Image 1 (cartoon, each protein chain N blue to C red):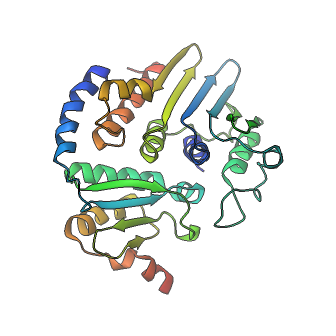
Image 2: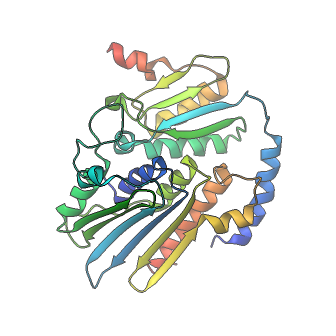
Image 3: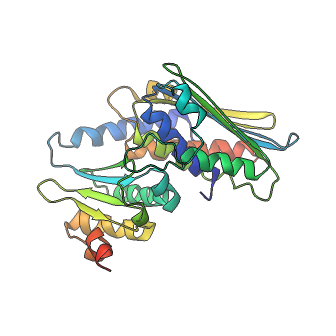
Length: 124
Length: 183
């Protein structure tokens, strides 16, 4: 049974991690489209998979946030990755499995997975 | 939407866009009355009477990317498909409240779905807003209130930290299980 006492214990652990986080702009930002279109297409499990994998790998310089409609609903779920100093990467037609690959390839290793990008989808 | 909880995730974004500082989500399941009702109430900017009158029309939207807005109209039709009802009230400057009532045993009623994931996703999208989630099942209920969580966590830790969101998810999962008479 999860209790508020457990949350208090968690607090110290989280605080230690938060204090380690760099206060500069070197953080990677991952944005999931979560408007009606994204949610209906399956954005919630994508976000869950991203967060689980980032937590599992203990990646501290990465945030997962949400945004509204990106404007290309037919390609949802959409995930945008902002790596400081690089161009924005837009991944489309995501699912939980692809989301895990994004964490491992793009966020950890800095490699773009071309076949998932909006450029690849629009050329087909 | 395949789950009612996905409608809720979607509808809550409307409250967030309306600059609400408090969003209350209430799910009531009453087997004797054969209903499952969902109420979302916010203290956001509300809607002008003209907009409100027509808000369940899919061609009425405040979005600017295109002229179609399906969130509310899909939620309404999902409830009505079960033989239920939908109601929305709004006062400009005070807030908006909407209730969708589903017939509980209708074959067309979607499952409630993963409310734990929906609530944690809503919190993650805007951790500074306060949320109250209440789930009533027959004579039992539980209430989750972010203000209580923030009291424990203090100001240094955002509710959007992974550990916190995970705790919230598991807390709601456990409470929901207890509500249904589980372990």
